[in-house]
Length: 131
Image (cartoon, rainbow, N blue to C red; front, top):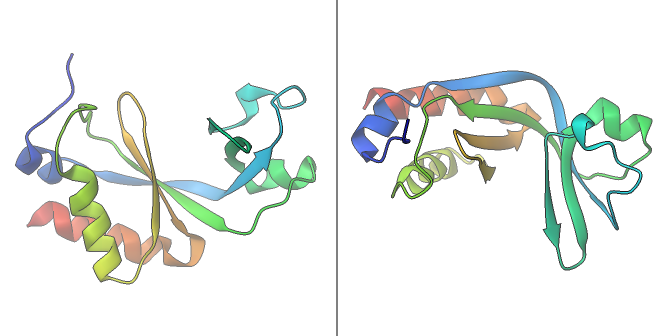
């Protein structure tokens, strides 16, 4: 089934879901010693691989990080070529003073916010969905 493209429908049905736990962004030179089934996501950059994983796993592997995040998934199946969803929720969060780091996956958008801002971010997203 194709993802939703209509912005009004996307916002109305985005249904944010706050995942339990704490998540961090780390960087590693390669993935040779990283079991990819134990990470949330990775992205290859010129400087190395950025990996997103549970803070507890990063601590176990003794990986450095500087930002502890909460992970919010938008459960609506958004199309990768949908226009305006990221702008709408990032603007709403930004207006509330909440920084967000976004990962667009095939089915859903995933938002990482500072752990201390998690509950407020959920309130902002639900309010945006009701507008």
